[in-house]
Length: 185
Image (cartoon, rainbow, N blue to C red; front, top):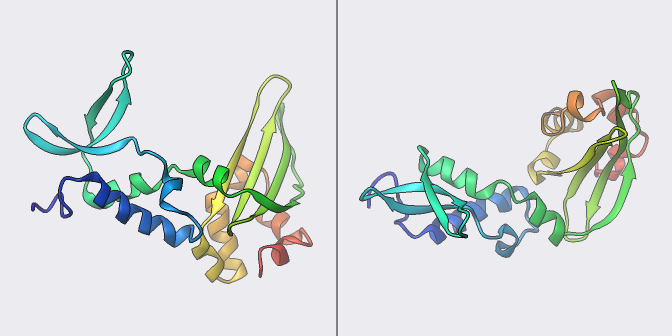
């Protein structure tokens, strides 16, 4: 076995290890929630490579080599599963977080909620838009953040959901009467 592929060439061994990394942040997750990855290991020009797969017009998948190491391959396999995680873990309770600033130009904050999920875990859900466009985004809060002090939690949380892009600032979170208790601090 070479150094680049310490677990062989079967991508499932890497997916299992990536899932274990994912479980650190989402202890309630199951392996099935990862869905089918668009990453793999394939022989390209007679040499094994980490690859990303892209769909072709005829429905086939084409592998594109990625110049990454094993640890980065794990990170890429473990990331990007927010949709699957959100769908598999329904919201059981949420609270609104008011923002002092709800308008940037013609873009308005419509909703900012912190949500508790049935299988465990928390997420932030933000919706914003203007008269002709808009969108929503969900950010699952890693379990490791809850092992920190409230102040350290806020630092990490605001890196995850930055106030410049998503309106709610540290002061908004600190001044919201129920947020700290809702999150278990």
